[in-house]
Length: 328
Image (cartoon, rainbow, N blue to C red; front, side, top):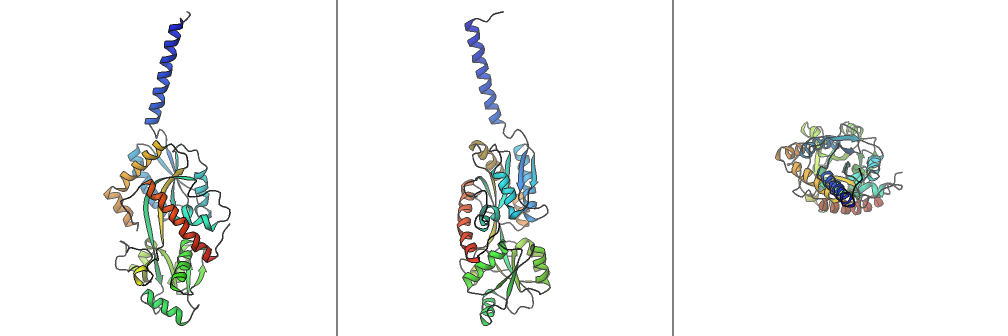
């Protein structure tokens, strides 16, 4: 049977309307398949634990599975590079930290992404304060006494870090620059070995995150001299900040944020931000994250995360330059 011209036009219009409605339906059903949540660090650490908690909660909020994918290596660069090159469709996102989203920009000479331009920010999560720990035998009970001890005999004290270019290394560099001290850097292959030698009094001090430090502080195996952020930590409220002990601008922490590849459609970014914001403002979820040492704010916006990334890139560029640290 042959179609008349009028019938053909009617069929074409019906198909066009159907396809347009199908397109609307597709847009409205995002996410329509599992989302990959890249964690650029190994399983089992604090970053991984937070990411898995968020993945579970946000999955329920979106009504879609979120699969945590650990892509560790090169200080977080391997996972970050993978996400930066992923399809901009909203189905690959990353739980980023200060390393891949700020510090590494200056630390690595051959970085194939720029944290300020290669990603679309989704949500700011919070930050984990660092804390200055010293061996129990060290005759200093506060930051000013530590500074005086160093100046009495410059260069005789050292600080351990989890490796060259790690935040624990740069925290010591920043401390030296602001306090005028000459603490010598001793790099280790990870936080565990550095803490082991601190406990054994093989090194004088270290800068590490409060979550890692808490059991050793509670057991009295180390002395905490100061929290390395502008505000005290909820995890150790009795420990004063380094800033309040004569170094008012000293602020070192690890921030956490969720990002996607650049050019993801705005409606999908908005949907993701709404889901993460809902979860991050849930009292039970906040309590669990804060129990892991995380400090949170009321601003979970993409704009705030973008601001944090920009300011942290600039801040650590100056510290890395002063340290003379360079990794490839």
